Amino acid sequence: MPLGERAGDKSESRYCGVETEFHDDMPQLLAHNVSSGGFDFVVSPLMDPSYRPSLMDRDHGGSGVLPFAGSDLVLSPSHWSSHVVGMPSSCSKGDIVRQLCQLWLRIPLLKTDDDSMDVNPTNLVDSWELWNSFRMLCEHHNQLSIALDVLSSIPSANSLGRWFGESVRAAIIDTDSFLTNSRGYPCLSKPHQKLITGFFNHSIQIVVSGKPVHSLPKGSRDLAANHNDSNFDGVQGHPLRPYLDYIGYLYQRMDPLPEQERFELGYRDFLQSPLQPLMDNLEAQTYETFEKDAVKYIQYQRAICKALQDRVPEERLSMTSTVLMVVGAGRGPLVRASLQAAEETGRKLKIYAVEKNPNAVVTLHSLVKLEGWENIVTIVSSDMRCWDAPEKADILVSELLGSFGDNELSPECLDGAQRFLKDDGISIPSSYTSFIQPVTASKLYNDVKSHKDLVHFETAYVVKLHNVARLAASQPVFTFTHPNRSTKRSNQRYKKLQFEIPSDTGSAMLHGFAGYFDATLYKDVHLGIEPSTATPNMFSWFAIFFPLRTPVIVHPGSALEVHFWRCCGPTKVWYEWCVTSPCRSPIHNSNGRSHWVGL
Image (cartoon, rainbow, N blue to C red; front, top):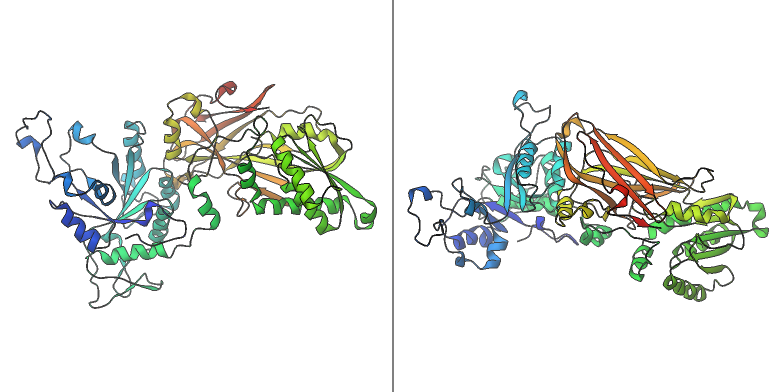
């Protein structure tokens, strides 16, 4: 019985399990806990605790492992896979037994920050260190996951945040961690509630463990959620059912996923190669997806409105026509936004729509004819860098930005196009800056690692980041301004950055860097995906991810020093990156050997 239904949410966190003792009748165990008790699965030892292979004779078949549990035929394969999580016993020491299945390593979520009053400060243990030691011995094996034991005292928010970038599959909450509300029913503290919500959002399943410790009022079916929350109904029967109902209540009170999040569910933590807009012509489906991003074009329209108003004062409205060039016009969304801006401000426009993709040009011609724009819009089928414009433009509009700002060669394209912009002309966007942020991203790292080659570790990927831990605030990397009137113009860049991991975070594993951008379209109109200033409800861009060949452990108080290069050659542009502190990594993608963007 899933905890509840949220629109678009089909994650595993909808299911709640219960930890049980060993039972030699698995169908009966499931009947009591799943069919009758309402839980979705059991976490149970599969081996009789009394089993001691060292005290028994070897079987005569020569396998070396005697039967230690009931037949697997007592349940169907689907029931085993969906309703049972097996726990190895302490005597499972043989290599054959240990290699039978994937492993959830059970880790206590210990409180280690400075405000802990119940732990000796000189003997603090960071549970993340326990996990990290084990996974490094296993070479970051992708079948190794975590089951966190959530205790009554939990670490700081920064310390907890590390786990959302690790391969956590389950959170086990003992009944001792629950408080008692005014009606005698189980509830959790506000920090625990926030943590559980975070687990739900990251597809981490909850498992209830322990014996009931709350004496519930007899005859009542009205379970209070917590001291201040509204009530909800619970079904009596299973002794741990009140705890399940409370977990279900926390799930059900979460806000439904917004439409944008539902659309992006399938893209979460999925590595994609960035677009090559100069080398490759975009497909119709790509154009269609981008054209649906109403927020982006509203921002562009606002910027064009302000530029038109600055360009043409009110007293010259009737006698002035502004020349506006859309370079990289695609199938016309910026042409439409420009015409709507002209109508909104009462300005006259003459538009050149420049596009190199012949398929998009065909669509542009149809659009112009359909909308009756023939006297306003001139379509130019050409690469903007090669076109000889018949006149100079007042305003140059483009949407050439990538996830990292300049990674789809906006600087090179606009440098080539600015020759037909008037000396006092306006470029929209006028500037853009890339940002990077250190992240823990074990899933992304394992996905890259699975290719077993150098090329994939030296490639930057577009990805909808979800199961990641952001270890520090992002910092700016490269900035480009348009038009660029410098006589010594170069689009090569280098930046050294230092990040400080908050001291209460504890040690963390750095798997790579998330990349973002923020762009100024015109004056105070901006758009971007940098987390602290991201444009709400805009979906045209996901973040970019720069992986590290070897993950780096960053300890509290140690500096994280990073170097990024943007390199330019006659036919390509590429990025290089490395870490020099707390340890040295190789320079990734040296000379663009693995990944580049073609000019």
